[in-house]
Length: 451
Image (cartoon, rainbow, N blue to C red):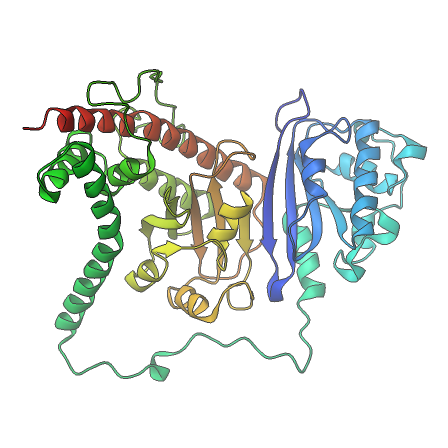
């Protein structure tokens, strides 16, 4: 049920409903004692395009009388902006108390844990949250789960009129242009070669920029000497060449040849990865950790398709680092993702999980992106940011893909995904500030003594 002391924390999620309506889901953790709880503060600031807000109380052990009044006030605030407030309470006694309160906590004052709510106030039957953009008279609507809230909003929102165009279905093989007449093996080889060349072209400018910095800083004879420094450091510390080149480009240089690059640096022990107990975190590399992140995330939601992206420190874009069950066309198309137009981009920008219930109907995607996702066999996805705390900047995003449209995650699934994301983010931060900086200091020593 979560911690029993203190106000707890809040995790946010955007559930993209069919035909574009969205649900801003905020999961509360710990007891709700008053309006200062982080979940209530997050709930009154939904992103644009959301039709309703739901506060998930599955991890809340108790709600005080003041907390009930605060929830009612939150509902009235949202109603003024034509947003409904739904309260997802799996516990029946809490659900009865919140329903009976009906938004009039100030008069009744019944604590949710007391179980003395008035009967007959079951707001879950009072109508859809999406109707009119607000709950009845600014009162919260009580449901059993976020999935039930999403299903209720989707039912009223996904009623296309007769004039509404039907979303285009993914193209069938018969509708595609005929392949050139060449042996299948040769076509596969050529496609692989083209993808390799495109990937190399995307990475080459960054490495060239790092070579130029090193050549000038250490007065090296040419760019080949600079590349040798990068390559040696990459191999010695098991750090990807692109990662080391990025660090050279983005990290302020040392004061002089003779100075230590990071003199005040404190060395920390690597954080534990509870979702991968067999992994030695002190010697693991990012590929091993991200593979474990992806594997565990897919296990939690029960799918065999997914990918992990990291935030590029230079551009802020997302880059695919690991994937499973997705074809090469998908991986190439989404190799680099900008700041909008996809679920993973929204998850990174909002620092909140984004659930796309149906890729085929969601207007968030541009048609080329939609076709690439559908062609890979995905109809729904959950994109979870890798972030230690809700207020931190994400290190990346893990996305799970599903063959059929999806519903909102259960509280247990959401909590498990958040724990994986928080542990992965902590390890990635440690790696960047420990192993990568070790490689930079070694590179600095090698460059300063170059002969």
